[in-house]
Length: 233
Length: 278
Image (cartoon, rainbow over all chains, first blue to last red; front, side, top):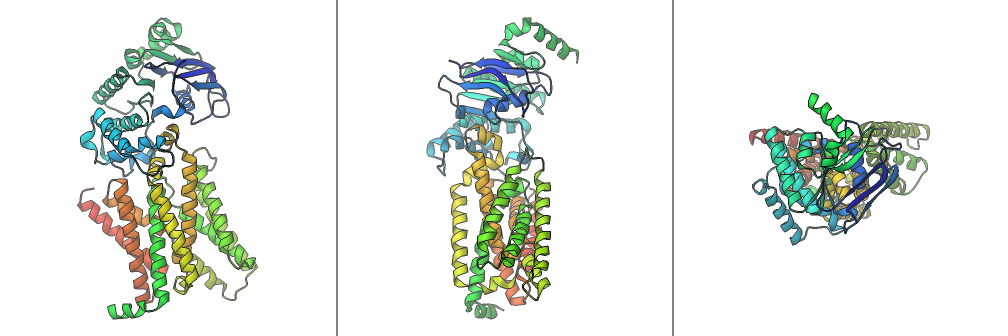
């Protein structure tokens, strides 16, 4: 059984914005979701996360994964840009999902936060204010937080948007390393070239839907078309 | 002056006013940070106008205990306002404006149509700008206020980490399995209780000041959530204590004096923040 299985999934608000989508994500996969702007990538992601209900079809989790085991790296919101919060506070808040009604963090959770900050190379930033960090550093903070929520699977929404080339490369490297360490990755990306470099599977949504391994995608008509369009830009 | 103050403190009504004022200020500052960050600075204003409307209805109906009507109505409005959030057809600020202005208008209309008092404009003025009723509190009212305030503080401390998580990133909180909607509901209920409590102190026009000034002042000085929250609580308590004392000594209206002190502190914090390079 796969971590996540989507069967004839149609996503949208009230009416579907996508064709029926079928895909599955296994342990340690690296799935990139690509497609034109407005194809419904973010909506699909929110459906996978359970933030919105599917219009049709179902998403099921399995292989020991529950809905709460999914870590999420959202796109930045307006609220966060002037939020007075230290890095440590934000990373710790990733543990909140498992806390239930328990009011305070346990020692283990605090250790987990420290470890994940170390893992993302942001330990020395722990008392800094989030809004004063660079874009790349902020993304690392949010990654560390997502890792506090789960070590199994991360869902990343355009993790490199707005980053400079160096920070972008570092971010991909970081995500790639997490994947090698056994973390399953689902990533929305505009950057098809990076997607093809790191991903094991591609889900292309739009007028036509493709799901398969990266190699199959490169040989499919839809993949060739999309890549040709992208390279002409 | 000190002697005069000590002399005043001998009166129980002055002590009651200080206790209640400080507690209300403490409560209202706690959620201020969350509300400012969620772009709901004006919810205090909107809700207090709703409470004003409810109060006029209660007085028209000759209810002996108007809290029975005011509190539920305000809580329901708070829930509706905070819930409308992202997907609503009416966005947060528009919804607040709509509800607050119409409640104000209907409240005044009702008061005019079914007035039971001879001094209508005086009545309206006291509800809008804070009455002297904080100086005429009975022991029973003080106890009620103390109990409610302590409950608010206790709930806030217990749910502090969750309120932080939900305020900072609601989507993430939901995705990792938190019941974010339940916590938004909790925030709405607490804020409604605070507003109803605070109406006695500063009146329904000035209530926003009590909620947002301490938070804004603290955000000028500190950069992590815990420090901002603690600082805004301290600022709020100091401001309202000073405001009440000044108003007693100088004979000024309580509500506007507290707000004026708040404005002063905000200005000082802004300058300090500038100097410290934050």
